[in-house]
Structure formats: C-alpha cells, structure tokens
Amino acid sequence: MVVFAGQGDPRRTLSLLWRAEAPPPARTGPGPKPRLSVDAIVAAAVAIADEEGMDALSMRAVGDRLGRTAMALYTHVPGKSELLDLMYDAVHAELPCSYAESDGWRAALTAWAGEVLEFFVRHPWVLQVSQARPVLGPHEYAGLDTLLDLLRATGLPAGTLRRLVGTLFPFVRGSAQAVADARRAAAATGSGDEEWWAERSAALLELVPDFAERFPAVSRLEAEGAVEPYPDEGPRGAEAVPYLEREARETFRAGLGVLLDGIEAARVGRT
Image 1 (tube, rainbow, N blue to C red):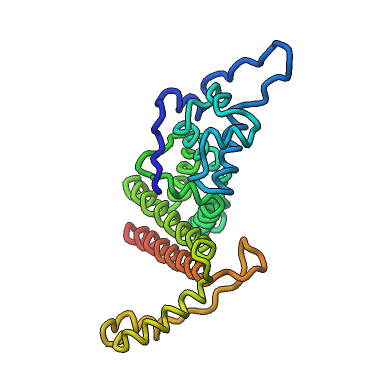
Image 2: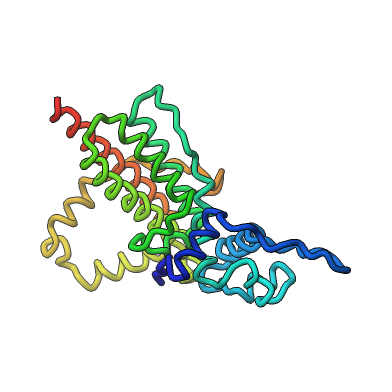
C-alpha cells in the first residue's frame, strides 16, 4: 500500500511540522492537567506503526494507546493526514546530520547509505510513504542537506549532484524494501527462505528439464556467479541472517560500490 504525504491543510500541516504555532493553553481549572501534546501523539503513532504496521494506524488507536479518546487528539493534530506527515518527519530526526570526512567522500557516503538503510529497516512503514509528495519538514530537509554536503565533496557540479540525490535515495530505499520484505516473508507465508527455495527449485527442475537451454544467461550466472558466504553479523546480533536478507544486504553493498565507482569516474572525467 502506497501512502501519499501532504494530504492535510498545507498551512496547518507546515505550522505543526515547524512548530510555528503555540501549543494549546494548559488547563487551569480543577482536575489533572492535560498530558497530551503533539510530540506525545506523534510518538504513540510511530510506536503503533513500528509494531503493527501502517494498517493499524488510526486516530482511535493512537488515542487508546495514550488513554484518551480520538476526539481529544484533534485539539493538537487535525487528523490522520497531518499525523502521518508529523510521524514521517519525526523519525527522520534519528539520522545523523554529519559524518567524518577525514577518510574522503567515498567513506562518508558509504557510512551515510548504511545509516539510511538501517533507518528504513527499523521503520518499514516509512517505505510506504511515496516520495512523489515530500513532507517538507525540518528533519527531512536536514537529511537532504546532509547528503548534499557529502556529495559536494566530490567536486561535481550542482546539476549532477541533484541527479545523484535522485539516484542514491531510491537505491537505498529499494535495498531497504528488499530487507524489510525478506524479514516479513517467513511470518507472512509460514515457511523459511531455505525451505521455500528448496521446494520450488526441485519442482522447477523436474517440470522444466530444459531450463538451462531455455535460459542460458540465467543458468550461466548461477554456475559462475558464486559469492563468498555472507557473515552472520549486523543489527540482528548472533542470530543467523535468513537467506533473502543476506542476499538483499550483499546486493546493497555491491550496488553501492558500483554507484560510488561511477561517481569517481565522473570526477576523473572532469579533470
């Protein structure tokens, strides 16, 4: 399911994103003071999306998590559309705004790409938010500013940097989507990666005995394109990384290397 940001009232949404309007006044009458705030609502919504996915998100669900009615939230956030924009921008605050450039632009961009990949994997619901309509929040802009700073160190012209941003972000998002899907596959289908592939590979070879002749390039790649085993390491600790996730992460590493080689070639071509 693709979700488009920027569906709410533009002025109200941007005011909330940039905290340009004062919060509602605190209650002065008898009884406990209200504990609700934009930040508390956004944090609760992010927790729901992280734990249960975008489909579980509603103003009522957020209210239940906070021990309030959905109507109580509308004083702070006009609706679900505005809430989505706030959530999206809020989680982007997790991304670093600077990277050590002492080892050069390539090492810095490699670190950036790895951080952004893990960010998307932590918040897979963010991958459902289309890039066709940016949120235009401060943390989203900070992420763009950080990447542009890293790319500027390549010495390439502004027009090229603009296109590189449009290349690197979708590449990392696509890689993260592959990792996120790999993690969901076993739970969604009831079978692990190795089991799934073993069953279908055996059936395919039996039903299509001339597979190698019909698809020689694919077969040649399978025969000649062996890669070194992927180490069971990373954010999941000592737990073995499932096959599809290993493949997705190795593809990310290899693809990123080729992209950075291309940037280097463009730099050399200008000298």
